[in-house]
Length: 520
Image 1 (cartoon, one colour):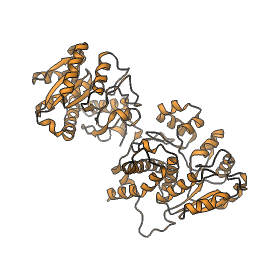
Image 2 (cartoon, rainbow, N blue to C red):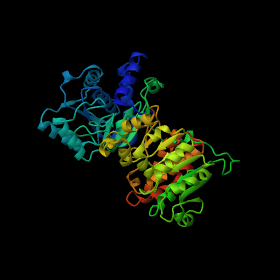
Image 3 (cartoon, rainbow, N blue to C red):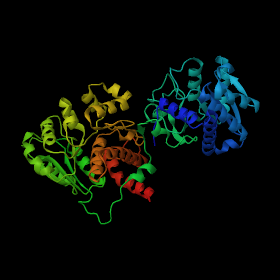
Image 4 (cartoon, rainbow, N blue to C red):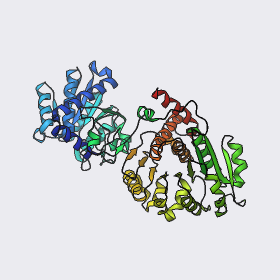
C-alpha cells in the first residue's frame, strides 16, 4: 500500500479532476459516504438517536465534514456543526456542502469567543461522537487561538473522536504536532495513508486507521511517482515464497553469523536462533573460541565455528585466516551483534569486503566500527543491508540523534543513496530505504520491543530471508514487518512491560504460520 505526502495527495486529486474529469464534489461526496460507513460500523448505536458534533474548517477538510454531517443527519443521527470561520471564508466544494447542509435544516454554530467554546464544550459532553474536520493535510502553521483552546478541550473530554483524513494539527508529511493536535479514536484516510499517520508522534494521535477508496484511478500513486509504501498481513502473505515439499536444509539457504564477545554471547545466540526461526536451513556461528562451549550448550541447533581469540573473549586480526573457509559455502553473512568495542571488526570487515561478494547484513558493533571508515560501504561488490538504531545512524552520518528521530525517512534515504546500501533504520516506525529511492515505512510493532537483543533478532531474520531467495530489499522490508508482528504477538501474550527479545524470537514461527494461512 502506497503512503503519500500531502503534496503527492494534491497531485493525485488534481490528476483525477483534470485528467479524468472526476469532479472534486464527487471525490468529496465519496469521502463523506465512506467516512459515515466507517462511523456506522464502529458506532452502530448512533443511528438510534445518537448525537454527533462536527468540527469544521473552511477548506476542503471542512467540506468533507459538512458532507459527513449531512449524511449522518439523513441516516437519523442528530448532528450539530461548529466552525471557527465566517461563511464568507468558505469557497468551492466546502461552500457548496455548507449551503446544502443548511438547506436540509442543519444548524451551524460559529465559535468566535470564550463563551462559544463553553457552548461547544457543553455540546461535546452531551454528544456520543466528535467528527474532526477542522484542518486537513494542508496545515501550514501551528494551531493557536480559539482553535487551540477547542482542540485542548476536545482532548480532555471523554467523547471519542473520528478524524477526517488526518487529525487536525498533525503534519501529514512527517507526523509532527503543529502546536496541538486532536487525539482521535479512529482516522478515516482517503485513497492512501499519509506519512503523518505512520510516523511518530502522528501515529499516537491517529488511533485506528481506516483507508477508504473514493474513486481515484487505480494507478494514481504510480503515475505521480510515489516512492513510499507500507504493508499489512494480507499484502505480505501474498509475497511469501512457498517451501517446496521436496526441499531439504540446503534448499533453504545457509547463513553465516560473526558475532559475540565476552559478556555479549547472548547477542550471538539471538541472531543465530532468529535466522533459524526465520526459516533458513543451516546457521553457523563464527565466534571467539573461548565462548564456543557456552554457546553450543545454549543452542543445540546452531553450528559453532571457533575463531582465534587467544582466550581474550573477543575477535582480533588473528581470526582472519579462518574466514575464507568459514564463508566459502554461505549464502549470506550477518555480522556485528555483540562483537564489542575491543574487537578488530574493521580489519575483519575490510578482509571480507576484499575477498567476498556475498550479501551482508550489518548491525550493532559492525556499524560502530565501520563508522570510522564508512566509505568502505560503497566499495563492496555485493549487497549490504545495514540495520542501525538512531545512535548507530548518528555515528555513521555525523547527525545528532534528535535530527535522525525527527527525520528518519530523509536520513535513511540520503545515506542509502550516498553509499549504495539498503538502510533499515530502526525506531518506533522503522524505515527501509533503497538506494534507488523506494521507501518502506513500518506499521507493525510496539513499545515493548524497546529491549536489549530485539535488534539482534531482526538481524538474523533479515539474513534468513536473503538466504531463502528474497532480494536484500525484500528481506529488509519483510523482515522488518514480521519482526514487528512477532513483537505484537509477544505483547498480546506478555504485555509490553515485561517483554524480552527471546519472546519476540519465540513468536516468529507463529507469525509465519498465520501469514501462510492467509496466503491459502
